Image (cartoon, one colour):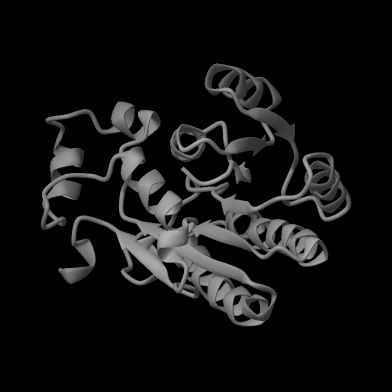
Length: 246
């Protein structure tokens, strides 16, 4: 077992964020759960043994200072997982409200950029290198009608991943992404219960005939943050049961 690392996971109150945090804690790391929802993130952090951090990652006036203080207060950050994202605002290109598209871009792109910029600066100042893992989506490469607003934001996350990877490599900082297909979070399980037509429709698009579990995404994030992935940077790793093959 390697020595414990300090890990920030944004969007930590949600199903994927919690699974990612638990996976890092299981390997002995110390996790800071960052989220806008004070009550939810505090409850999850208490349950899994993490430290809650209340932050709006889209607020350019407050987020950098909050994140920088957290990094300094914990003796630096070794791993950042940009998991926070907005998935719920959909519509066709002729019908999507521009305000909804802007909100999606603010969280998924600007938020990821602000957190990456702030934590990367802290990593550079510490001089120890580090790892950044972004949670993207195969939707950035495979369009689904009605979901283009979200999917184009994730295409931007993939591009941001490559941008950060090439510029931060000289500082010993690796940057990669995990790109899931549909993930069976508790919320999705309620919306598409087992045996439902909606679940069957999604599963029919996947060669492995199953949606990803949150632990599948977590395992990929932990791998990309590990020494086993020490020569991997600038990659967006699909965790999609083969959906991109179809």
